Amino acid sequence: MPNSPTSSRLVQLHDSGQSLWLDFIDRTILRNGDLARRIRDDALTGMTSNPTIFEKALAEGTAYDAQLAIAGTEPGITPQALFELVETDDVRAACGAFRPVYDATRGADGFVSIEVSPGVAGDATHTIEEARRLWATVDCPNVMIKVPGTVEGARAVRELTAAGINVNITLLFAVEAHARVIEAFLAGLEDRVRAGLPVDHLASVASFFVSRVDTEVDKRLDALAAQRDDAGRARLAALKGKAAIANAKLAYRLFQQQFAGPRWTALANRGARVQRPLWASTSTKNPAYRDVMYVEQLIGPYTVNTLPPATIEAFRDHGIVARTVDADVAGAEAVLRDLAAAGVSLASVTDQLLADGIASFRKSYESVLAGLDRKAHALA
Image (tube, rainbow, N blue to C red; front, side, top):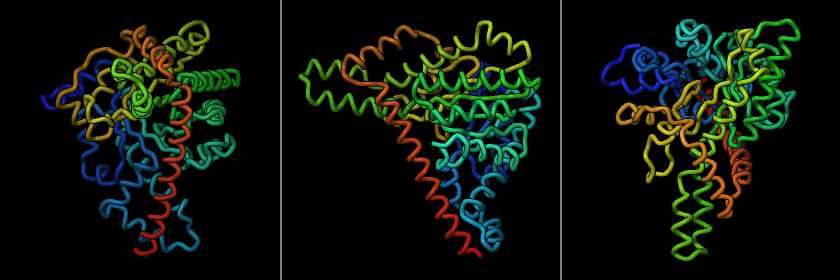
């Protein structure tokens, strides 16, 4: 890829072994050449979508109006069917844009993710059914089906992997949940091997959310600080903004451990690829923190970072590229020990964030359905 002055930091990030994906989808960028430019000049190699992103895309401009006007006249079309029609069309077009990346990397990169509806998060059977339908509807080898990282989602991951479907496991906050989906992926690959099926074309990522951990931990630290003296407040303040990176580094260590040894070697010898950690929620929420901290501190091989456009531009301007994801893991362990000693339960934090994440996506999904229904009827 060209190493132009305006894109050199993004190209260096790619060359370090980390894939840069765009956490955004919009019909306008699919058609006006912006996505093609980013792929060509910025070393962009993938894209993620979710109901919140589609809600924003559909609320702005008129790019979807022509399709909605036609679809809205179909008798009995439900808002759910209308949304699926719109999102699968966009994801299919994006898969086409990234197909040269997919082909050039022999299926190692160039993926576009589409998410099952939030309502099936607690039901493995319905998750599998919906994932299979989306896979067949988009009908591109470089689509990934996003499945939430719940216990039921992990069950779905194994069956979908065994069926030969690329899976992006989303809303991972806890290292324990990460371990569960790695196991599901490995078991799914082994199921295919036992069935005499190939594993060399399958891809998967485990989307580990980052900045939201700091947002919740910092809030709890502030609540504790209100009850302490000056020295106690200073100790708690020193822990702010550190939990998320520490948690993610331990997730990467788990990845390194699980994709090594005899079990993995047996699968790798058949052409299987690792399930890459994907860093999600990597825009900085606290303006007091460096705006690219969740990119700079988690750079390393076999990783993906999915970024919104604003964070990509910030990294292009002043990001620093260096291998950091497995640096000072002992320090990361110490941060989490200090948080526990201070009275912050990381397990409680990650449990709450998973529940909040599912609720947030459900709210966005319901909102986009309502908006689509109104718009389609008005246009029709």
